[in-house]
Image (cartoon, rainbow, N blue to C red; front, side, top):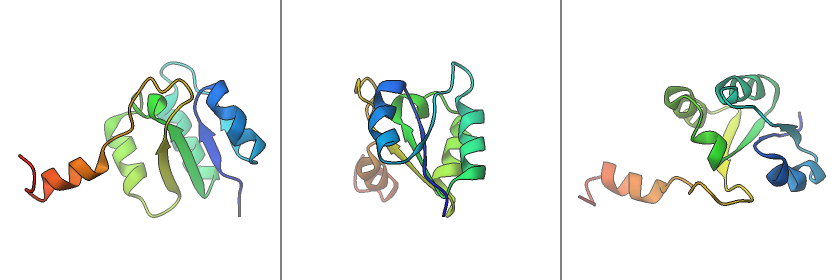
Amino acid sequence: MSAPVFIGDEISAAGFRLAGARIRNPGPGEETAALAAARGEASFVLITAAVAACIDAAALRGALAALTPLVAIVPDAQDEVALPDIAARLRGQLGLEA
């Protein structure tokens, strides 16, 4: 089993590096390519919310919906971008929220 890949800023990456994750710090405009590369080499990919906000929407949806590798969005150390509210999205899709 391959080590997980973390895609995000250096500060957030510090703890994941200590836990054994391989780190990717994409520059501006390189986020979607970094996700595609990570999906090809890892069984688990973690992306900060700030990086996820810069990834092509269709590519991100496809990665999150795929069964393998598992892709998860995590908060970044600066907490500048909020995590997606999956519960609210599901309530809306089920018609429980207007």
